[in-house]
Image (cartoon, rainbow, N blue to C red; front, side, top):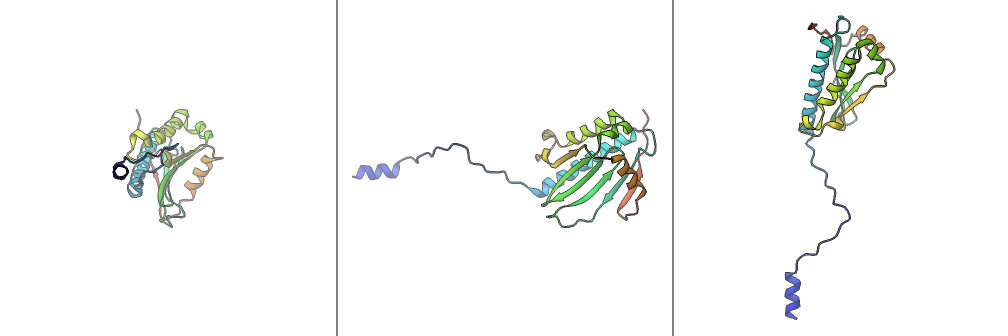
Length: 176
Protein backbone atom coordinates (compact mmCIF):
# COMPACT_ATOMS: atom_id res chain seq x y z
CA UNK A 1 0.00 0.00 0.00
CA UNK A 2 2.84 2.38 0.65
CA UNK A 3 4.23 1.92 -2.83
CA UNK A 4 0.99 2.89 -4.52
CA UNK A 5 0.69 6.06 -2.42
CA UNK A 6 4.30 6.98 -3.18
CA UNK A 7 3.77 6.22 -6.87
CA UNK A 8 0.71 8.44 -6.93
CA UNK A 9 2.56 11.31 -5.25
CA UNK A 10 5.61 11.06 -7.50
CA UNK A 11 3.76 10.32 -10.73
CA UNK A 12 4.31 12.60 -13.69
CA UNK A 13 1.35 14.76 -14.67
CA UNK A 14 -0.83 13.32 -17.37
CA UNK A 15 -0.65 15.21 -20.64
CA UNK A 16 -4.03 16.18 -21.97
CA UNK A 17 -4.31 15.62 -25.68
CA UNK A 18 -5.73 18.61 -27.54
CA UNK A 19 -6.92 18.78 -31.07
CA UNK A 20 -5.78 22.40 -31.48
CA UNK A 21 -3.38 24.61 -29.60
CA UNK A 22 -5.06 27.08 -27.23
CA UNK A 23 -5.41 30.56 -28.71
CA UNK A 24 -3.78 33.27 -26.63
CA UNK A 25 -3.94 36.57 -28.52
CA UNK A 26 -0.87 38.77 -28.04
CA UNK A 27 -1.06 41.81 -25.82
CA UNK A 28 -1.68 44.89 -27.93
CA UNK A 29 -0.10 48.12 -26.80
CA UNK A 30 -2.67 50.52 -28.26
CA UNK A 31 -0.80 53.71 -27.38
CA UNK A 32 2.43 52.77 -29.16
CA UNK A 33 0.54 51.21 -32.06
CA UNK A 34 -1.44 54.45 -32.51
CA UNK A 35 1.80 56.45 -32.41
CA UNK A 36 3.27 54.24 -35.12
CA UNK A 37 0.13 54.54 -37.25
CA UNK A 38 0.42 58.33 -36.94
CA UNK A 39 4.04 58.14 -38.15
CA UNK A 40 2.99 55.89 -41.03
CA UNK A 41 0.24 58.37 -41.94
CA UNK A 42 2.78 61.21 -41.99
CA UNK A 43 5.10 59.10 -44.16
CA UNK A 44 2.34 58.35 -46.68
CA UNK A 45 1.42 62.03 -46.74
CA UNK A 46 5.08 62.92 -47.40
CA UNK A 47 5.19 60.44 -50.31
CA UNK A 48 1.96 61.87 -51.72
CA UNK A 49 3.39 65.38 -51.55
CA UNK A 50 6.44 64.12 -53.46
CA UNK A 51 4.12 62.70 -56.14
CA UNK A 52 2.27 66.04 -56.30
CA UNK A 53 5.55 67.97 -56.67
CA UNK A 54 6.24 66.12 -59.93
CA UNK A 55 2.98 67.31 -61.54
CA UNK A 56 3.14 70.16 -64.02
CA UNK A 57 0.13 72.36 -63.25
CA UNK A 58 -0.28 74.45 -60.12
CA UNK A 59 -3.85 73.26 -59.75
CA UNK A 60 -2.75 69.61 -59.62
CA UNK A 61 -0.13 70.39 -56.95
CA UNK A 62 -2.73 72.01 -54.67
CA UNK A 63 -3.84 70.00 -51.64
CA UNK A 64 -5.95 70.50 -48.53
CA UNK A 65 -5.10 69.47 -44.98
CA UNK A 66 -7.83 69.48 -42.34
CA UNK A 67 -7.37 68.84 -38.64
CA UNK A 68 -10.60 67.83 -36.90
CA UNK A 69 -11.42 68.14 -33.23
CA UNK A 70 -10.94 64.90 -31.38
CA UNK A 71 -14.38 63.58 -30.52
CA UNK A 72 -15.46 60.44 -28.77
CA UNK A 73 -12.67 57.93 -29.40
CA UNK A 74 -14.88 54.93 -28.87
CA UNK A 75 -17.59 55.68 -31.42
CA UNK A 76 -15.19 56.75 -34.13
CA UNK A 77 -14.24 59.99 -35.78
CA UNK A 78 -11.87 61.47 -38.36
CA UNK A 79 -8.78 63.10 -36.84
CA UNK A 80 -6.92 64.35 -39.90
CA UNK A 81 -7.64 64.53 -43.62
CA UNK A 82 -5.36 65.10 -46.61
CA UNK A 83 -7.20 65.76 -49.90
CA UNK A 84 -5.34 66.07 -53.19
CA UNK A 85 -6.09 65.47 -56.84
CA UNK A 86 -4.65 61.95 -56.50
CA UNK A 87 -6.53 60.74 -53.42
CA UNK A 88 -8.13 61.48 -50.07
CA UNK A 89 -6.11 60.19 -47.10
CA UNK A 90 -7.74 60.17 -43.65
CA UNK A 91 -6.54 59.24 -40.19
CA UNK A 92 -9.46 58.04 -38.09
CA UNK A 93 -10.05 56.46 -34.71
CA UNK A 94 -12.55 53.78 -33.77
CA UNK A 95 -12.67 51.91 -30.48
CA UNK A 96 -9.46 53.66 -29.36
CA UNK A 97 -7.44 52.34 -32.32
CA UNK A 98 -6.27 54.48 -35.22
CA UNK A 99 -6.70 53.44 -38.84
CA UNK A 100 -5.91 54.95 -42.23
CA UNK A 101 -8.21 55.20 -45.24
CA UNK A 102 -7.00 55.99 -48.74
CA UNK A 103 -9.87 56.76 -51.10
CA UNK A 104 -9.75 57.48 -54.81
CA UNK A 105 -11.36 56.41 -58.05
CA UNK A 106 -9.85 54.59 -61.00
CA UNK A 107 -10.93 57.33 -63.42
CA UNK A 108 -8.45 59.72 -61.81
CA UNK A 109 -5.74 57.94 -63.84
CA UNK A 110 -6.95 59.97 -66.83
CA UNK A 111 -6.15 63.18 -64.94
CA UNK A 112 -2.91 62.35 -63.09
CA UNK A 113 -1.53 59.55 -65.24
CA UNK A 114 -1.07 55.86 -64.64
CA UNK A 115 2.45 56.24 -63.19
CA UNK A 116 1.35 58.68 -60.46
CA UNK A 117 -1.71 56.56 -59.69
CA UNK A 118 0.42 53.43 -59.27
CA UNK A 119 2.97 55.30 -57.13
CA UNK A 120 0.16 56.47 -54.86
CA UNK A 121 -1.12 52.92 -54.30
CA UNK A 122 2.40 51.55 -53.83
CA UNK A 123 3.41 54.15 -51.25
CA UNK A 124 0.40 53.30 -49.11
CA UNK A 125 1.08 49.56 -49.16
CA UNK A 126 4.85 49.98 -48.74
CA UNK A 127 4.46 52.10 -45.60
CA UNK A 128 2.27 49.52 -43.83
CA UNK A 129 4.13 46.35 -44.82
CA UNK A 130 4.89 43.82 -42.11
CA UNK A 131 8.64 44.31 -42.64
CA UNK A 132 8.49 48.11 -42.40
CA UNK A 133 6.72 48.47 -39.02
CA UNK A 134 7.22 47.28 -35.46
CA UNK A 135 3.55 46.46 -34.94
CA UNK A 136 1.52 44.49 -37.44
CA UNK A 137 -0.04 47.44 -39.28
CA UNK A 138 -1.07 45.69 -42.50
CA UNK A 139 -4.68 45.64 -41.35
CA UNK A 140 -4.79 49.30 -40.26
CA UNK A 141 -5.11 50.66 -43.81
CA UNK A 142 -8.07 50.51 -46.15
CA UNK A 143 -7.57 51.33 -49.83
CA UNK A 144 -10.82 52.16 -51.60
CA UNK A 145 -10.57 52.75 -55.35
CA UNK A 146 -14.24 52.70 -56.32
CA UNK A 147 -15.39 56.20 -55.46
CA UNK A 148 -17.73 57.78 -57.97
CA UNK A 149 -16.12 61.17 -58.53
CA UNK A 150 -12.98 61.95 -56.53
CA UNK A 151 -11.99 64.76 -58.89
CA UNK A 152 -15.32 66.52 -58.28
CA UNK A 153 -14.95 66.02 -54.53
CA UNK A 154 -11.45 67.56 -54.63
CA UNK A 155 -12.70 70.55 -56.65
CA UNK A 156 -15.60 71.09 -54.21
CA UNK A 157 -13.22 70.96 -51.25
CA UNK A 158 -10.95 73.54 -52.90
CA UNK A 159 -13.87 75.94 -53.29
CA UNK A 160 -15.15 75.32 -49.75
CA UNK A 161 -12.05 76.04 -47.67
CA UNK A 162 -13.86 78.09 -45.04
CA UNK A 163 -13.08 75.84 -42.05
CA UNK A 164 -10.70 77.33 -39.47
CA UNK A 165 -8.81 74.05 -39.20
CA UNK A 166 -8.29 73.74 -42.97
CA UNK A 167 -5.12 74.74 -44.81
CA UNK A 168 -4.91 74.91 -48.60
CA UNK A 169 -1.34 74.63 -49.86
CA UNK A 170 0.48 74.34 -53.19
CA UNK A 171 3.45 72.01 -53.39
CA UNK A 172 6.58 73.46 -55.01
CA UNK A 173 7.32 72.01 -58.42
CA UNK A 174 10.39 69.83 -58.80
CA UNK A 175 11.56 69.64 -62.38
CA UNK A 176 13.96 66.88 -63.28
